[in-house]
Length: 484
Image: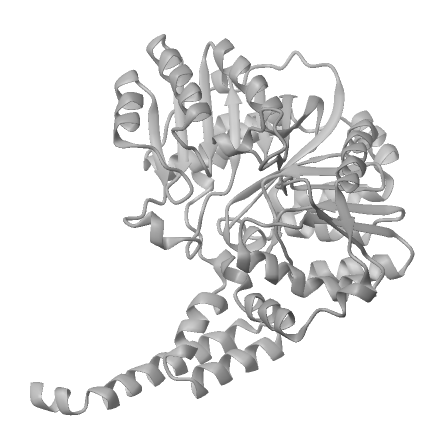
């Protein structure tokens, strides 16, 4: 038997390959996806042994259908149901919102239909520019915590700023404050001694989907890309800034890092808290007792409509992408997008092209120098189609722009963790705050215009003259879009 296998090893491997390939082909057929995609995957599977299986495994999986954890464990708790019920708007508030938002009301209804995410009114928000402002504010609030601190970060390093935060967490835990920290196991790097220090101080720390060789796994897996901080259930932070020294500029222009974060006080913090608990149940593999103590009554009287959108393989719909798509398609005046990674799906590209050709001012701001060679060239492969449709594209030159913001028509704004790319829309766990207020939009527009001053506009006439080798690199990198 062993001799037969040894003499026919390649034949056996080919047979196994085609059994797997044919099985995968049937799976694709039953999904009833786009016919062109179906044919492409089937041809690759059957024509290219081994490579076809690899391509399907990396590119063809429907990630959203693979529910990684059960959200219902948290959402079905009586306390959470009561909290969501209390956040429901009154008849008069609904009438007021209907009048103020007009067409943008579609965005609110879409997210509520997708995720039952309520629109909260009693909020105070503060836009934090760059890491210097974010850490100054966050550290101050962490020091004031009296009941609990909840952190959920993609990148948490034990460098200078990281250790400053860690020292505060340890001190607070020793003084009786509940401290829970969830970090992504690929993005974050904490030494054993630091982890032991946190544990000895009473800080609960759990990695999100731990891996054995994080240095080599890269992006080829589900990652928690969120950056959340919740203090006493009253203050929340959300945006693009992780906990690491490279997010600090210290007034130096060298390696300048442009980013945007959001501080929220008010009812919207309850939604951040709920999403934290859903993640915590998963990473800790246990269900903590959720009480009203984690959802104190807010004293905020300022009215700023905010809706929290979470998206990932655990959600039924691509919530963030669908709201962004609808916001673009319903734009009447302008759409301003800032993103460090622009590797969009066909829907977003088409939306930007259509509204631009219909007379809406569409501007896209991306980095000129990226922290990823492949992501940079993949992004560049999309620019010509946008430029030909009249979209204005700018490349940031002062340093690296990592902000993830969108402003539409002076009434809708988005600040969060989601990039405009395939991974954020389909694979990673992301969370954004959607704000429906003119003053917030005005602040973000002013920031956008300031960033443009530090950017170069891409000219279509110049862009199309790129050499063939450059275009080849772009097209090649584009093939790996789902992995970037």
